[in-house]
Amino acid sequence: MSAKQARSSVLTLEQYLPYRLSILSNRVSMVIAQAYKDKFGLTITEWRIMAVLGEYPGASADEVSNKTQIEKSMISRAVQKLLARHLITRHVDEHDRRRQNLELTGTGKEVYEQIVPISYDYEDSLITCLSDREIKQLNSIIEKLQDQAEKI
Image (cartoon, rainbow, N blue to C red; front, top):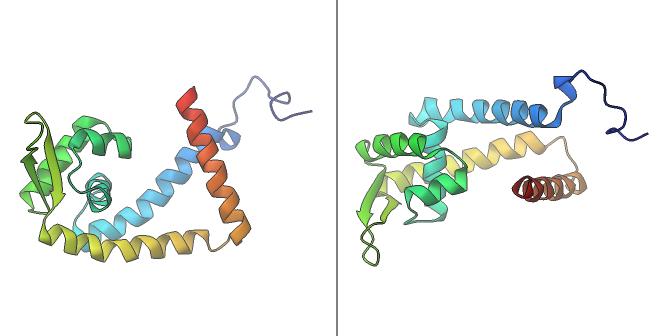
């Protein structure tokens, strides 16, 4: 009998995959977010914006929202805080005057360059319980689930 066939009429949250993924995501985010907050005074959303801009300089707020899956109003508030702290800049795109591009400032790049190794260290400590094979399988499974979530 498959797991799907064995389901009862009571939802057991601790076994419900979307709930388990949410709890895991929250736990992982909170631990590393505390490091960002303590050392750099950044929220999760602010760091995610900076992470996107570190990889995609000149992205718009809409593109950041799409890449992070964070709602636009939260992105907008976090962008305002990052602008006020001079960690990012915003300028009108020379090819499309309706578009505003975001980029890390010099200070923003320095903060980014300090956080990246901390992020990788945290990732390494998290996956240390997995073998190389399991890490590849996990990455494959996550990609499949992301693709499936896009379809439904």
